[in-house]
Image: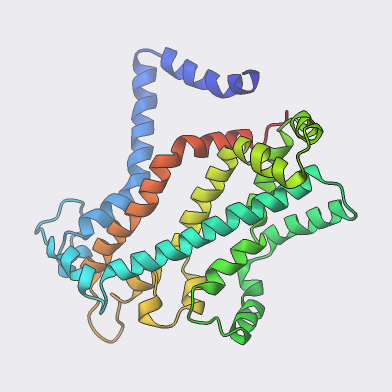
Length: 292
């Protein structure tokens, strides 16, 4: 509980304020919230405007309501937009499953086992955090091209089963280190092997870290544009980020209203995911850096 005291004291101080100071602080907080939410509100407002009013009348209140942007956007790109949402869900859920399984296994090995070169391998793993994705894009594309995986979901899903996200491995390593080793030793005395310890003890106790990995993997994969642009070529394989680009046309008129309408609907899965697991997400981020 002592670890939570420094974080809780500012909240108690804010609640104890009275009079003009409290009003001023709440006014500032509301102002910051409005600034942060303005792009989202502008997108929602633009989704209900005619194309000619989106950039000529930038206010949040539409002069003319055009709810037909949603029906036009849903079927105006050659395919139903539900196809792109379904493709994004397939890729995102596959990436989540791969990251949760592979990163937790890798983290368990780094946190609990002793093997030759452990510190070197751990340092190399952390070093990949500083390596931009663009630096490995060409060799990865060559590998997947030779495997004839281009224009499939495999290049976006299979690597996640190989523990390629060092951030989540490090997050889980820190969390597993906070779990007392006495639990492992007690399970070993009862005859449990390392895999059984991982499945029956480590995984249930590291649920907050797994939820954090799930949320971030889902959001980052769902919003990823570059990788999906490189590997997906046919319209029927497009995901949401690629489907939104179909509303833009340099040679003719772009359907900005329909694009903003579908952008608004595209936020719903990530928003639902965040709202459902918000408590676990905060818990996972707060406890992953604590040591037992």
